[in-house]
Image (cartoon, rainbow, N blue to C red; front, side, top):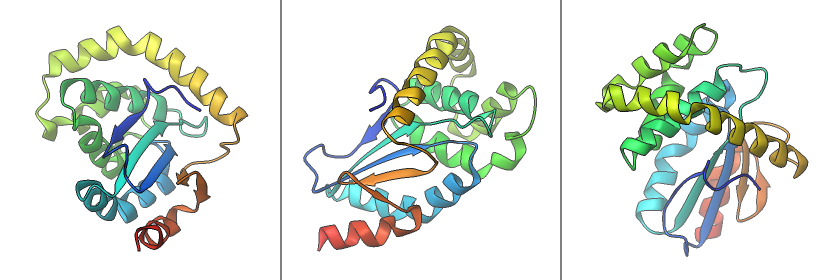
Length: 175
């Protein structure tokens, strides 16, 4: 599996249901899956029924996804819920940064509503950037070797589930 230092997790580890996703923040289908599932997943996390882990899995077809993962990572370093909020903002602003170069300023601007310390955010991006990118690419290769072949790639209690079936699948497991 991917490196746990790259993962973002929330929820009780002893929850009945575990959802693990591999996503690309530049992937339009990942954005659809996020929007379709986020409210029910958050409610189940808050109810203690679900443990949720997200691994970045940037695809070559979305060249800015690696940078978006780095910016979300740095947002999380400032605020424990920073990743989740950053993910919402990055997916919703995807069309503004996904095919733009250079992209870092656009990604940082997309996170302005989070009221993060911009100096700390940029420091994290520059200081953590090289090692984070290397770890991410190494993790990506391990995930490919273990069978991850697309985004979003979602496992529910270890079973691969199509993004549009996650809510109903989780609901069945919680009955």
